[in-house]
Image 1 (cartoon, rainbow, N blue to C red):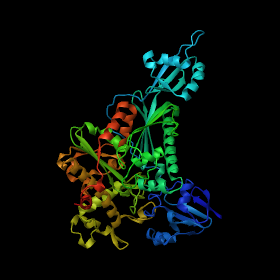
Image 2 (spheres, rainbow, N blue to C red; image 1 turned 120 degrees about the horizontal axis):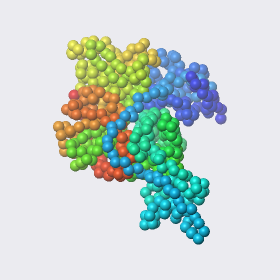
Image 3 (cartoon, one colour; image 1 turned 90 degrees about the vertical axis):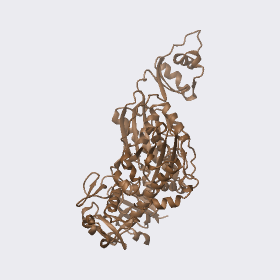
Image 4 (spheres, rainbow, N blue to C red; image 1 turned 180 degrees about the vertical axis):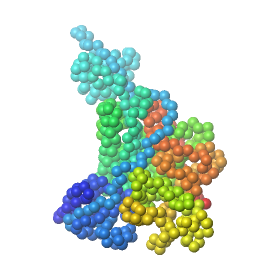
Length: 613
C-alpha cells in the first residue's frame, strides 16, 4: 500500500500514512496535539488546518462550515480531509496552552481517619531454641495476641519480609489497610503519609496533594483532560470507545497517563516522591469513572443507561498502573446512575445535603448537567442532557474557557467584554455566551422565542446603539460581537441564530430538570433555602445572566452561592476520612434518581423551559 508523508507545522512533526487516510484519524493516532470538539462527528467546524504544500480530497459539506475566503486560502477541516499525496499542514486550532481550570474548593471540618496506617516497629531477633516465624514475630510486634490472630498478609509481601527485616536489622515500618499488612519498608518511614484526591472532569482534571496525618493541602495540580482530542463531551468519547478499534483501551491509557503526569508534577513541587503517596481517591461523572477503570461505557450511552457498576471500588496499584507507592490503594467513589456519577456524590458529600435542615438546590452546569434537590428528609437527583453549548462546542465562535476566550460581556452605553489572559479575543466561552444572550433579551433584541429581532422592529431606545451589530449570516440575523480586524485570528466573533437555539436547548434541559425535581419533591421555588452552583462553569458565570435567560428561576437569584469545585472537596473528604468515604456510599444509596425522559409531561415542560421569559 502506497504511503504518504504528512508534515505538521509549526513543529515540523512528520508521519507516514496510507493512501486515502482521514487526516483527523491520522492526527489522533499519532498523538498530534489538536482539538476536535465534536470528536469527528463533523458538527462543529473547529478543526481548521491550512494545506501549505500538496493537495487533498475533501467533501462538499465542508463548505457549510468555511467561508469562501478561507477556502481560497486552502483552509480545510481535518475531519473532512483525506490524504492522497505528500502534504504539509499548518495547524490553526491547536489546544490552547493554558485553560481556566477551577481548583478552588470550599473547606469544612472533618475528623482525620486515614484509610492506611503506618507503624514503626522493632522486631525481636530469632534465637536458637525459639522457633517463631518472621511473620509471627512481626505480628507480635504490631499487636497483642488476640488482635494478631486476625491479621493477614499477602504472598508478595511475605516474599519481601525476610530480606527487608534483616537488611534493616529487624526495624521496619508496616503499612496496614483494614486487617492486612499491605507493605513493609525498612527502618522508620512512619512520618510520611501522603495522598491525592482527583476530580476527573470531562474537560479538566484536578488533583489535590494532601498530608493524610494533618489533612493539610500541600499542593494543587490541574490539566486539560487529554481525552478531549477524542471529543469534547461524554457521548463523543463513548462513541469513540465503542466504535474505534482499541478505542476503550486508548481512552483508558490516555487518562491514566494524564493522572500520572499530575502526580509527578505535584510531588516535584512538594519536594516529595511518588512512593510517598499511599492513597488516591477518584471522582468523576459515570463515563469518566468507567474510562478510568477501563470499563465500557457502551450501555451508559443508550437507554436504559445502565452503568457496569455503581458501588465504591478499592483497587491495588497492580490493578491500574498509577505511579504511587506499590502498597497504595485507589479508592473510587460510587455512582448514582448512568449520568449522575461519583462527582455528584462528591458534591453532595461536600455540601452535607444529607444533614441539611433547609432544602437546597445544587446545580452543576455542563455538557451533562447534574441537579440535586433535598435535605435530610430526602434527596432527589437528575441528569439534564444540556449538550455542549455551555462548553463552547457547536457554537459558531465558541471555545472553552482558555486564553483568548471572551468570558464576560457588558451592555452599557457601549459594548464591552473581558478576555481571559487579555489580548485580542479568539472566541466566546459559555459564560460569555450567557452574558450576550441575557443582555440582548434585556434590550429586546432577542424575543421570548429566541429570535433575533430585525433592527427596524426594535422598540427599546436603550438598544439603539447596538442595532448596527445585527448582521446577516446565511440569510438569518446574527449579533456581531467583535469585528474580524479586532480578533486574534482575523475572523469575526458573533452569536448566530443557531447559537441561540443551541443555548435554548441547553438551558431548557437544565430548567426542566429543576422544575421536575421540585415537582417530585413537592415544593415550590419559595421553599428552596439555598442554590449552590458547583463546578467550573457555575463558578465563572454571572448569576444574573443565568436567571435572565431562565436557566435558574429568577426568584432564586438572591439565594445563589458558588461553591467552587465541590466534587474535588468531596474527593478530599473521602481521602482524609474512612467515615466520609463510607458516608459517600450511604448518600449514593439514599438518592432517588429521576429519569427525566420518562417523566410524565417531560416534553411539554422542556418545550416551555426553552422560552425566554
